[in-house]
Length: 134
Image (cartoon, rainbow, N blue to C red; front, side):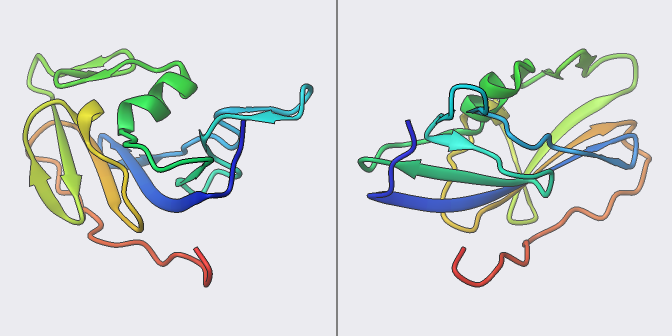
């Protein structure tokens, strides 16, 4: 259920073979039942909303669970780091190692997942222009 005692936003970019992949609207939202997960999206902007009744630790893997897409150190969905392709994760424009599912979601954090051949040039975002009040 959605709560308001703890409220912040992070942003996610997913880039596959140099092209952006849209993060779906309404992840973690059951419109028919009018229920929201504490971690959800409202639109396809990539903004991740955390609205909870108490302060907790949230990680990127939780969003991918809502999306029903596998995320670990070697794959995102059906895309596996093999055969000349790699998966790289970035936080605020800096490459991070380890399992991207463990990246902590914090206020105004910019997260980018980049999949593809290492020779494809990708401009990795280091920030996101959140709306006022976000």
